[in-house]
Structures are given as structure tokens and as C-alpha cells.
Image (cartoon, rainbow, N blue to C red; front, top):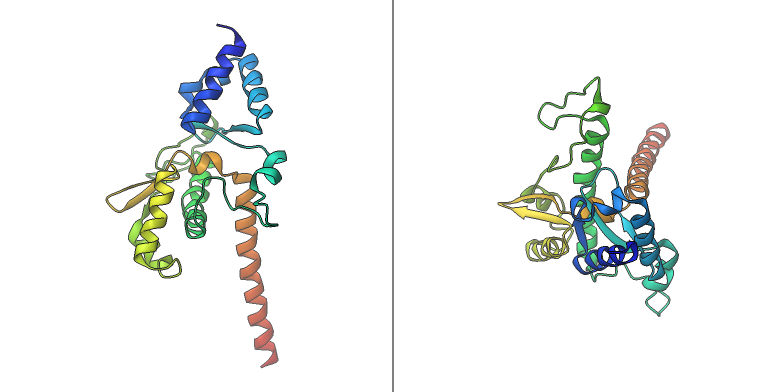
Length: 216
């Protein structure tokens, strides 16, 4: 089988199944020629690989240069997603991503054990932990954000959307990350926006409070 044929099969699998475990497409990581061919084939139809060292999965996403074309709704507005997530589901997705992925990434970077949170002096020799490092109680998320998202029924509907699209797993009231959550969402873009945004808001509130105290 030629490199082109192998690359075509891998692209077909990725596009049809949305997300695959890395071992299912190991050729991409073991053969540079195949990887380049896969990237070129995807690029020719406006897609690119989505994966990184901290995830066990590979997916495809719309390439940056194609986003204006794909997400333009033709009415002067910008589509929020290309998979039809509702606005409420997107809001809940951001909340869950922040609560699962931000702390997870810190654990991964520091090679901590999720059980004892100890940092190894030789952390570079320890495999990067990846599976279910952080879990969320559904009732806790609902208590904090349920009413703002429209109540119990809508909250459940939004969770169902995220589950169907592979962003989360949910079992016995416990939410864990699905294969798409940390694979398709760009941490390097979203994390700074959330962290800096929250900090800026907190600092702004503090400064306002300080000024009010001085005025009094």
C-alpha cells in the first residue's frame, strides 16, 4: 500500500468518526511521510489535525484560514459552532472545560499524582497522567449555574448535547471529560482568555471597592 493510500484511509477514518485514539492512527506519529500526506490532504479540504501531547486522541478541525468562510452565516454574523450546539450548551461547555481542563493541565505539567498531589523530583521521567484526573458532581454544577442556564430541564438538555458530541462522559451524576473536550478546544487560546479575563475582572472589582472606601 502506498503512502498516499495509507494517508487517504487515515483521513477517511478521522473525518467519518470525528475522533480516534492515538493508537488507532499510530502511523501519523511514527511515519513523517504519512503525517505530511495526511496534513496535506486535510488542508486541501480546509481541515487540520487536532491533537497534542496531553491528550490520547486525534481529531480534525476547521483550519484557521478557513474559519471566516465556514463560520460566516451569510447574514453578517458568526456561527458559534459547526456542529449546531445551542448557546446554552456552549456556555455550559466553557464552564465544564474550565473546571475539568484547567486543573487537569496543571496536574499534567507538574506530573502530580491525582491521589496524593505530590510532585516528583524526576517528573520528566513519569508518564503524563491523562485519564479522569478531575471529576465534577453534576449536582454541584447545577447548584452553581443551573438557574442561570434556564433551570433543570434545559440544564439536562445542554448536558445531553455535550455528551452526544463527545465533550463529556456522565455516569451516576459524575461528569468526566470526553475525548473531544481537551482535543478539539485550543488550550493555548482559551486558557489565557479565561484566566486573564477572570483576573482582570477581580482586580477591577477590587480597585472599585478600594476607591469607594477612599471616597467614604
